[in-house]
Each structure stands twice: as C-alpha cells, then as structure tokens.
Length: 350
Image 1 (cartoon, rainbow, N blue to C red):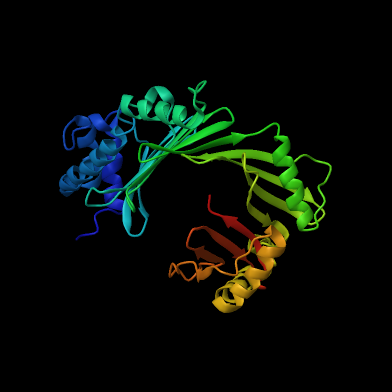
Image 2: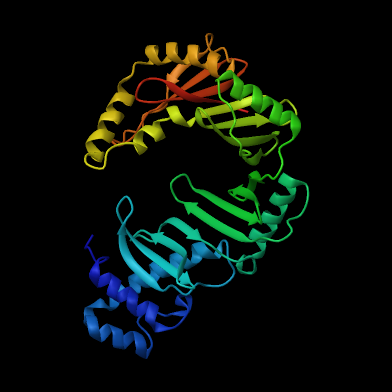
C-alpha cells in the first residue's frame, strides 16, 4: 500500500477539518473551501481526501456509540501505535478533550473522550445510572467527571464516572466496581490495621492514614489504607465485616522504590541491571523466600501452594516481579519482589 497517510494525508485531513465546523458534516471533494485546500496540495490529492474522509467517518461512528452529536476535530496527524494510524483529537478550553486512533483501513483501535453528562447518548446514560445504583444502592448525586476509553485490542470499553469523591467503573457497559475516598475508618478496620502494622514491627506516625474503599461487583467492600510509619509507607487492604487482611505492601522494600533511586548519571544502565536481576531469579528460590516472608508479613501459610512466575510478556523492558500462588479451594495469592529477591508485599484474591 502506498504511504499516503504521512505529510500529504495530514494536509488532506487538514482540508477536511477546515471545510466546516463539524467534521461529521463534511462531504469530501465538495465545497469551495475544500477545493481551495486541494489547490494547495495538487489535484491528485482528491482521492486521498476521499479516503481520509472515510477515516473521519469511522472515528465519528465509534464516538456515536457513546455520545449524541458529531465532534469537531481540531487536529489530525499520523502517529505510531503498533503501526501507522491517524490520530483525530479535539480540545476544550485548551485541554485535550478526546482522541480517536484509526488505522488506514478504517478500523478504530483506540478512543478516549472526556464528555459531559449531557453529551452522552441515552443508552450510555442508562447503563451508567444503572451501574451506579448497582454498586452503591442509590442514585448518583450528580456526575462531576466522565472518562470513556475503548481499546480494539481485547475489544473492551471502560467508562469511569465520578460523583465528587466517589466513582463507578463500567466494563463493556456493565458495572464492574466502584469506590471513593473516606473521611473516617470504621473501628474494626482500624484494629485489623493496627495488628497488621504490629506484625511487621511498624509504628504509625502522627498523621491519619490516607483512606479509600473499593467495591468489586458482588463482593464485599475493601478498605485501602496507606500509613506513614517508622518502616516507611505501608499500604493495607482490609475486607469489610470479616476484617481480613487481603493485601500489604511495604513501600520501602518495593521495586518501585529501587527504581526511583537510580542515579541521574547512569539511569538506563542501573535500571537495566535491576531488570536483569529481577528477571533472573529461579522460581524455586523465590518460592522459598515467599513462604517464609508471607508467614512473617501476613501470617499467611503458602507452603501447600503451587507457585508460578507471571506470564512473560516478551517485552525486553518488562519487569517480571510477581509470583502467583494457587491451591485448590483457596484464593489465589500474588507476591511482589524486588531485585534482592525480597518480597515487598502480597495480595490475596477476594
């Protein structure tokens, strides 16, 4: 296929965008303004412009699945996204309001839009309101922010809606989870947190923890607490009613902490050295360390579990810093380790 989607195609797209305000209303190759733009790039661009209009139409058709009216794109450019694609984007008050990536064959591979509630179509509004009620057992007081994401890879659509400090997440139009910030933490959760901190020898500082909650569909509420302690910041996840510790993360031992401390002089070399060390550990060695440390950190016995490294993505820049533990009749446990083979945390599947 001829590479017509570079500078030349962008110029043709600019003509489409300049034709009238709303791109969805432009008819390629017709109208004085489009003809004037064509004169600037020569007459043999007409077919390219027609082809580009098909890409515009594909972008608008995908947007129509979520919002009511066509968008006025303000920019079209060729970008790399696993291959050459056209990026259509627009702004509101000098801030990016949305973007659609379309392949030369007209397939939409990615969409992001930050709409207002009044811009959503009736179907999306209905699904959103139903999801909020399903998660929180009440209607939203009003939505303060909306984000819509679509990825062709996997074919998934994510919508996140905020109402002040709370949010709900829809996946492919169905409620998946919700959550929000907390001003107060229930006493039983505080007690469970204190026990978890004591187990790792940590003492809470004078500040209250940063607290939030998450509700996965058809599961119990989970409280997420981050404490400043003498052992560094510690994150806890505790399940409501059972007061069960589902997760702990010792930030001082985390891989993220290590990576944040690479030198300014040789960041790439030091990062690569950490990556190679992390990815080189044998599963047997990691399992021995995990069984010991899970008992110490969470009073969790992993001795009878099957261990496996996380799936290798094949990406040369990836850090494979997780071990997954499974056992029939028991929830899956994931452990995270650093370049020294020390586990900084564990997470029990709810």
